[in-house]
Length: 196
Image 1 (tube, helix red, strand yellow):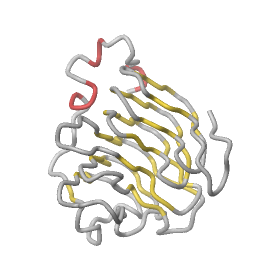
Image 2 (cartoon, one colour):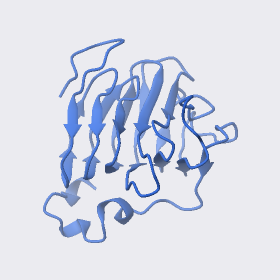
Image 3 (cartoon, one colour):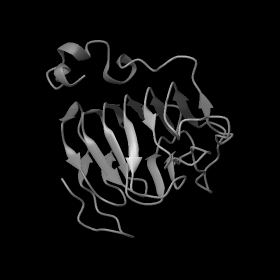
Image 4 (cartoon, helix red, strand yellow):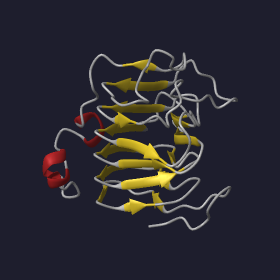
């Protein structure tokens, strides 16, 4: 699925606004705002997602990205999570993903907070040298006090955490998949465990 607008424009490839949504071996392409993971519980498995600016974004969804290829085609931020309060359930977790791209080294970021309670985790993933040493970029109007932008056990040339943004952090243990998909996800009708 493709967002047809190329450089310097918004064009959704996919908009997820329902609960219990699973996407398997898909290919989502775009430039800005490729994937709108906005509501409900979402699973993206063995899927390729490409873009440049805030190309995985949304406000209230809990989304798990398993063994996905995240491809940056231009300078910018991969995620823009819009969690706006402590009561908002939104969370994006990227597990066993591969981050690569055609942009220059150090010109892509794991994300920037769309709202002041943004929650994004990258874990057990391979981050190439396209990732800027700061890892995360600040959205100027957003207060950073309550952000939850974390990493755990990543590898690759873009994974070093020594110079990461001060408002981000490193976890002592990974986020379990049950935190996002629920305790009974293995028997859920919309979860194909052969992709996990």
